[in-house]
Image (cartoon, helix red, strand yellow):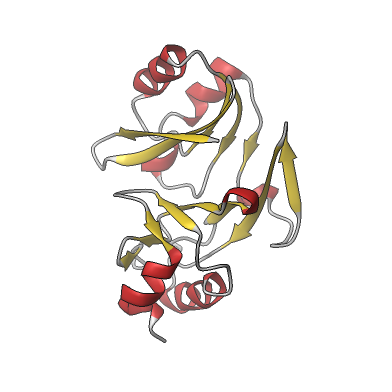
Length: 179
């Protein structure tokens, strides 16, 4: 598995391409569809799914264009069953995990075999996503952090903005993880 990061839009949202062989999953196709499309074409990839961590405008700006262009399935909070249900696309196995707080529909995509989690605006390096926007809730955020701390500490976290981080570093350095 290889991961390409494409920063899109005025908020520099991380749109990720999860690449396996010549196929990819598009994670959070924010705005700038042409940039996303050109990167997929440049890398000679065939998109096989779209993952949406949550429905804020900066994470879904190109969603309809991606669906129209590639005619592929969208996985999001509506796909969520429970934290233990394993999904599979081709050879990739993953879990959809609910982490409300920043927004009530926020889910993460966890690739256990690769120790990778795409977390949207739930956790950033040494910070968390805002809880003061519509459908945000700080108490739910704290409960989600407690739940995240139960996962293996060697997971790499891919946030919706900024650089990647590691669960072990967030447990050690992030003030919101201290409780």
